[in-house]
Structure formats: structure tokens, C-alpha cells
Image (tube, rainbow, N blue to C red; front, side, top):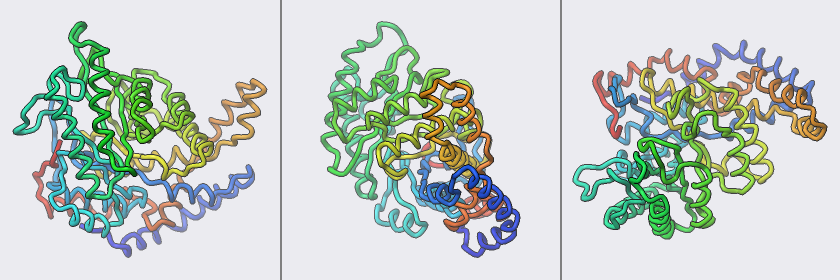
Length: 427
């Protein structure tokens, strides 16, 4: 299925009068505060969020998975689904592949299909947290950190193979997340595990093309619950510093211990120039992989406050970082959930752009805690939806992406094309 421009135009025409009234009203309000709404809209237009290939099917837990109809059965159908999202919001212009779940059989054909939908290929993701069919060595007790050099070699070769696939597709980064660690005291030597991982990462780093990056992701726990080799941003940063300038830290919002101050972590990494980007999701208890902004929208806003300041300080635009959703949609239509997540990211970004940095800094210098809080909360409590909708409209997207998705009966059409009982590849 493909969404045509005339369908989006008809949809927007029916909503334009109401939207324009709201946008003009907000524009005047912001103008009174010295804020140029059009400038914010332009920055929102430029912000692109990569869609992971594994998020296009229904997720699940260890208790069960309830697949929906019309799920993508191949990489090509996954690319088409991202094309649907991008047509609707014009903010999902790239797809991030997970290898070996989504190996392109014909790289040029995949590139051609993606290009026809105005898509690019983002970072490629390796997998050494699962054993694959016909795999010689098991990762049950680790991969890049394993005590057996043969297992480490196998994991290194897999990552180098992933780089090859990414290079063929025009990707420019490798993303690595390790489940390596231990479940019980005494099971693993912490220092040896770190040194083995560093040695393995150095081999992978040496295989990177000159214009590539490697993103090193961390996670406090799961599937190992006593120790994780790359357990926090500090250990990830330490690995990156030892590897070199082409290695940066990837932050997944769900990969922290409860109540971690993620915005402070972000500020520190940006200060050091070592933030690769984000895996966006939300959580109530742990790594829940819920819809972005569905549980803790204020935290998401505070993170973007630091991101906006960090980008300005570094003189970089949003295209200088990797932004990707990493979520699991257990009870929602995956495409609708992804549309909600992208919108939440844009809303938080827009709110952060409203913050009066000069007044905030003055309040800080005067230790005016009340005023500092007011400045942030005034921005957060501003309804910036008209700004996000305008950015989508000007980019050629829909004013109400989910509304149009439902009006066009996209899921029903996909079920007609692919079948009512389909299971997305990879998961």
C-alpha cells in the first residue's frame, strides 16, 4: 500500500481552517514572548527519527506474543511500512536494520525501494544476545566478553559482517548492545570480562570504514541480573575513550536504574562530545519499551532541554546525532504506536525550543530556584501541537497522521495484501 499525495492534501484541506486558527493564535502568543514560531517549525521539519525494523511487528514478552494482521513478512514490506509512516508525518525518513533478523538479499534493490519512498538506511544493529540457527558457538555465557576466545572471535566476525551489510546499504554507523554479564556472584571476573570486551571492540573498531561510527550502548541489567559488562554510561564512555574518536555512547531511555537522572547524563556526554544519539521509549518499571512520552513526558522534555542546549553549544544541528525509536508494541497497532512516539519526540523538542535560555541562566546565577522552575514549566505547559502539525504540513505530511491512518483503513488494506494471520520477521 502507498499513501498518495492527493489523499494527504484532501485530509489537510478538511482540517486546515481549525489548524490555522490554532497556529496563528499560538504564533501571536509566542511572538509576545520574543519567540519566532516559524523558526521553531523549521527546526522541527529538519528533525528526523529512524524507525527500527523490529518495531514494525507486534512485540511480546516471555509470556506470549499476540501478533496482529498485515504484519510485514519481509525486509521489503518493512521498508514499505516505514514509507507509510514517513508519508504521514514526514519525520520518519530512515530505517535502522537489525542483523541477522533483516538481512538484505539484494542491497541495491533495497536501496531503490527505500529511495522511492524517500527513505535512507540509518545505523545497523548487530545481535550477539541470541543464538542463531546453525551457529557454531553459543552466547549463553557471553559474546564479546566470553572466556572462550573462539566465541569472542565468532561475535567479532558477526559485527564485521554487519558492517559489510550496512556499507552496502549506505549506512554510516554500527550500533552494539551487549547482554554480556553474570547472574550470580563469582560467575564472572569483572576485570577479565571488561578486558575481553575491549579487545573484541578494538577488532571491530579497526574494521570500521573511515567515515563510520560505532555506537556503544549500555544497560544496567537484563538478561543478566548481577552484573552487566557495559552497565552504565560511565563504562560505555570508558570503552569509547579507549577505542577512539569514531566511538560514541548511545543512550536508551529504558536502560537505566530507577530514578536515574538521564538529563544529567545527556548533559555530561554532550559536554564531552561523546553522545552518539538516542533510543527513545518510555517506562514505568524498567526497560518496558513503551510508547515515547506515554509515562514520563516531563522527563522527556527535560532531556530535550539538555539536548537543545548541547547542540547549540557544539554548533551542530539535529542531523549530527542518531535519533531512533526502540520500543515493543504488545497491545497496539505497531504503526499507530510509532506515529504516537514520533509525535511525542517532536512535541518535547518543540517545548524545549521555547525555553528562554537567557532568563534561565540569570535565574541560576541569582539562585532563584522558583523562577528557574517556572521558566521550564511554562515551556512544558505550552500546547505546542500546532507547531508540530505545521511542520508536518509544510513538509508534505498529514495534520493528523493517526486520523488519516484510520480514515484510509491502512491496517485493513495491509491485511488484505498480506493476510490476516502474519508474523513480522525477526522478533
